[in-house]
Image (cartoon, rainbow, N blue to C red; front, side):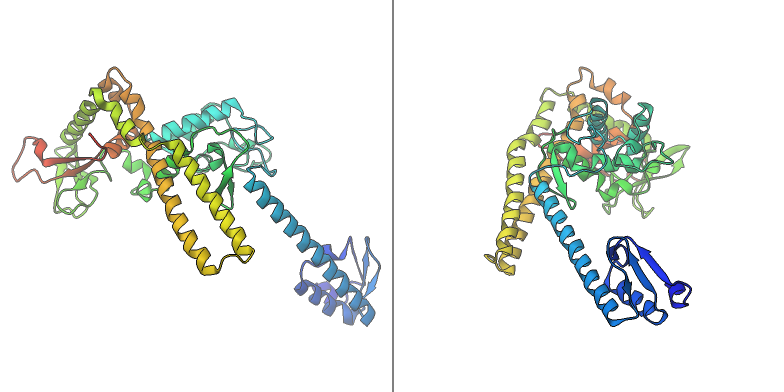
Length: 406
């Protein structure tokens, strides 16, 4: 534009006017720059325009307005087509989603199994970075799909961020996501049940996952899980006593406990509970609400929200009526999604409940999986052991069950 203003350009050649100016501001600047220098605009798909004359400026203005109208019409058609496709559960182009073939509908077995295993591992307490390393070891590459860009045409390796993106994607649960929200049941097959997906999303969105960093949380079993018996704040591992790790209240004034005896005691309680004949009731009790009924009701609520939006657009509802109805439905939908997430989390207990020797399985679990199971089953409060006490007293470790019958 500055070259035009300085008179260094005598003519401008463009394919069409809408490719030369994208909005009214650009058009005005072009006319103001070309008028004093008598620059001619020559269009491949159009006639020449001399912007130094009133007729040339009028022609440019008319053509630009027509071009903008076409662009806006095309954008409106595309938006309506995408909205309709989303409501029907259809896919609209894009790069291949991980877990599916290029058509976005046919399941790709090797990747689908990796996703299923990823949900199982996550709900069992495994960090995203570990899942990423496993996917990389299997030869899977995120750059082959829509979840990460390629680097110079080469597929990229998985990271905790790209694994998180995959596991948070509702398409894995057979849901059509539009503008960040599930709007319909998708035409492609689901890889996991909706309650499993919601449980994973709930875990990944939990702010406590990031407290202190994943590496520090993994060093001690009860960091961020157990509570101070005096003030109720989450305890953290800090320092050592007699070369043994300890748990401390954040205030450093209420509770300081040696970690090994507390952890051993908590482990014994968990193993004893999961070894009982009625251990399966832990899953049965929490899954007692019919998951299928919850999913069906959630779909009905979303459909009702779409109907309300159409009624509002047709003038059948006032803004106040729409707002009131939407608030009630959003509250109910949040409640349903929470129940589905709770049902999904309990799948982490299944391997232990079905084991013939719970102690052996417990000993084989890493710290992150043990933490997830403890956090699922109980609330632990550590009370001061008492001045001068050297022997472990189980009564100073308060355990409150979270599940019925625990």
